[in-house]
Amino acid sequence: MPPETTADGSRHSDRPQRLESPINIPVPFSLMTSARKSPPLREILRDPRLALMLAFGFSSGLPFLLIFSTQSAWLREAGVSRSAIGLMSYAALAFTFKFAWAPFIDEYDPPLVGRWLGRRRGWMLIAQLGVAAGLAGLACGAPAQSLGWSIAFAFLTAFAAASQDVTIDGWRIDAAPIERQGMMSAAYQLGYRLAMLCAGAGALYIADFVSWRAAYLTMAGLTLIGIGGCFVSPRLDRPREGASPGAASLAVSFVEPLGDLLRRYGAALIAILMLVAIYRLPDFVSGVMANPLYIDLGFTKSDIATVSKLYGVWIGIAGAFGGGVAVARLGLMPSLMLGGLAASSSHLALALLAAHGANLPLLSLSVSAESFASGFAGAALIAYMSSLVSPAFAATQYALLSSLYALPGKLIGGLSGVMVDEFGYVRFFIATAAIGIPVVALSLTVWRMQKQEVQEAAA
Image (cartoon, rainbow, N blue to C red; front, side, top):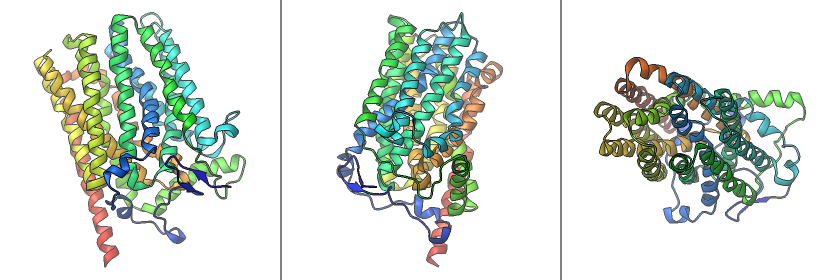
């Protein structure tokens, strides 16, 4: 197969090279996660792959709020109960279980467009069209009269968006080596946050001044940004070595990625997976109830759009680039620990807001703390999970890891409305902040294992 051209103009005939171990000896994960000599920041920022990640991040971030917090504001305004709103968040479980169909996306070309666009981009296009159709369907719904309609199209949107994430993550990991993944994830986060600006503040503004239907139809039209990025991105596919056609190959594709992780990380994989699983738990649990809190306190949709969705997005972008720079300069583990501590403790500001009532300065404070810390932690976690995967199973392993980090939050987040009804907003947000204690403990545990492997390797 002739070598492909990457987005920066270089030529290669294989995926980005990673630290591999001969005869299947596990590679010490300290070598995969420690800080490396990084090229100058100016050179990194000139990388044209960052512009593509900006478009792909926008494409990934656009549907999330529209089936999460923005939709929760629509549902609450329509008179849907808080308990039902919390249960509606289970539509986002598609992001958690995307590992179930990720091997299929990794293994097979899509129909019709596969020969034209390739495997990664072909599935990406199909998923993006599915997101557009799902958002258009939500626009035509009326939650107060037909909640079932909204639930069905929320699940369709979530499934298509989760499939899109699988293809984008696989493309990103294929496109750049580990030392570039920090800034690649920062560019992804920038696009993601800009999409949140549109899906959060933009949708609320349009809903306030026009209608919810107009808001969701506008968001469906914005999927053209990701579709454009799909068309102009380079084709990086190559045949899987040793792959055999048929059901047997598909069955093996579910087992091989797990076996590869076990071979490379051994017993340390348990601590790694536990850390990934709970790292963003505070954000997922509290995120469902943030907008209902603002509405119950008496803030208008325009207040929420201006402070939480407009101002907050830019603070989150700053946090994402702060996380990217930290990964490049400090290393993955220090950045990961700092991000986990900041993201969880920032929820104390939400508890303070809930205790004091409608207060715009306190709203700004809580949004600033939560948005910066969330952006920083998100960039650090994306880079960390990218460092863990093998090139041969990039999309499948990353889907497994990202599904794992979303699963506990989605399951518990679905009951967040019940918890608020039972304990109140203040105790609820204090409890989410306390989750940071085991996050920091696990970060230190994994970091200590890393240092022990360095010492054993040097002995």
